Image (cartoon, rainbow over the protein chains, first blue to last red):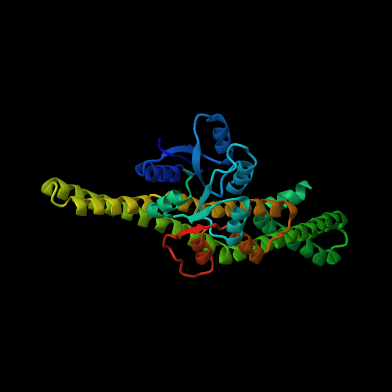
Length: 125
Length: 215
């Protein structure tokens, strides 16, 4: 059974690009448009194990850091690894993400091959 | 005050009218002592003089407000607009470059497919490698829309802020702004290094960045 990855980004074009890259490497992808939508989907989708979450930082409703903090408070998904994928390059934001529990930080525009390397390294078995 | 608001709305025309009324008033005062029998005419002239003086002072206030607005707009125009303009131009250039990249990749893709069809299995490895490179580059180029949105977002916010500042300034008859503070605030809302570089007048590094692992 293939691994499932959730991509959270408010830009549809980014979600499509990430989905395309992940699907071509054999991953199943679930998309969410912001942190709140992602939490809602994580709760409602019960028949899947999420092996990894790729999350944008600046989003409406619930941003990346807020989502990370909320995720770490859930019993089921608190150990699911999260990679931040963002245009943000501010060191302070990076530190906040690290403290909130992110495992890696990829700055956009990203090379799909490098993203896939990071995914393979961090993705839960 | 209705009269004052009238003057504020039509400050340019009223300044001319007020100047004329004032002049008539002054002339009336000047000639009045030579015609003592015309007391009612003197009263009218004195009234005109008072109206003229009050009109001139109101007009002066309206004119002063115009000067404050002019100074604010000149300052904003000289310092803030060039930064907005630079960011918008860079966003447009980024869009153009990305589209060129995508078109170029599609063109190469077409060539690869042509080669694949012509030589069938002989060049399979080479074509496969080229296709992989092309797909990778296409996926990078296709990310331009998100970057353009990020570039234009703070400019859009600033335009709204400017509009509100001008409206509030007109209502309060004063402009509380500091362009340096404004520029600093704008800079803190950037999310990409290239935005900060454009703002600072430096050349940005547009290369794709790697992955930072937190462990």
